[in-house]
Image (tube, rainbow, N blue to C red; front, side):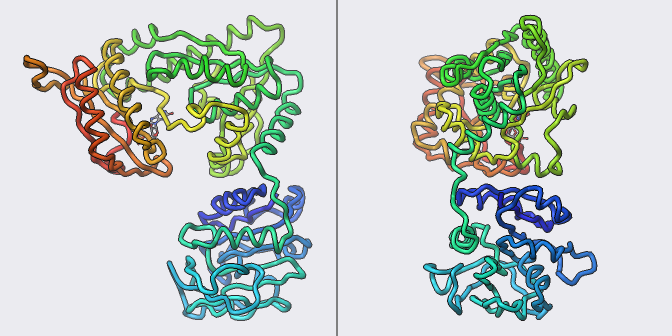
Length: 513
Ligand code: XMP
């Protein structure tokens, strides 16, 4: 891989993603990694990331200069650029020329890194210190008002560096610069394609599982579906997928898993019909946290039951549990190893304690967009691959009040209409997700047909977001809102009012409960 050495900025993951967008495999490694650990990864190039510190600060994350004498191509960014300069004998100083935010880069010399790009271009900067003198053998190729030495390169050593951040969106030509480093200076060839990714992951799963048995909980979401499809390709019927239908699903979701997923993968699927149990346990409950806890508990029970059933039916034992863990989770939790980890079991809702599983996490090195690309490569239908997020507790947390079969039916009908119209309006990629909420404990007076009604409101909650941590309410065109409102009040009995939630997150959460 191209190793992104993380000097403690929030940008390391983003850099790895950008490298992969250039179709070259990349991983993040902490700056505390030893030379041996780095070499063990068989890197083809190093990228030194930005970082918060000054190179000369006492607690500055150190760069082992030996890293730069491994004969590997190297690219320094921001702090990594300065660390590289200092490590190779250049001069870095606090010149007072600090820059934060957008500034203008002028290409001042012959530059392979910037060839073919505008001679002046906006770039994103964030620095106090600046390189004053490049290391010996390095050519200065660009400057900004606050950084006369804003970029350098040394083609013989296959090294280059930039003071600005090429990985951020605010540097419009940044991706091209990064790609030029990878292709032209490091001499790498693009090979990280969905087909290659899928092939190598399937091979790895085969190696890990051997002739063992594996089990995978399907939620209907993208990650578990792609993970299951990969493992199915690797070990066929020795994988059993378990899908718990808790009766809190949206219209068509069960069919999506039972029909579309199975048709696309040929996976062996056990469906647990648990609607009755869930509704019985939820009856009379109105407190959001209580509802969530009941659902969590019953989910575990259903899953356990299914696992026991699978175990009974099979000759041997089930040794492996498949999970759809993604790379950002792995990086954020310190890059833990991929072996049995009791805590992660809770991701699928927990498992019997006396069962020991080894985790199979085929997606643990992938970003979400790569997961989708691999899913498409494996032939999963677009409805699954491009799916918007949907919460595990399902429609239960979108009924404000007690959950009953009747109310679920009402909400399901309204939700189906909203989804149909938002899709027809081409808004699926603009909208992160659109919870449709039934205010079951609220009634208002209406007039429908010739008579007075006393029905429930439906809330539309379309939001735009990058990661669900924050969100803004989506400005859905009035015509679309009108269509949804008219259809819901006409077609769904017991609903006589449709309202729009215009709250961002914070202060509102995306879901109502
Ligand atoms: P909130 O409501 O906290 O939701 O703004 C943030 C994101 O998480 C989803 N969500 C859940 N997903 N199990 C899940 O798998 C849950 O219990 C759960 N609760 C909320 C929500 O749909 C949104 O995408």
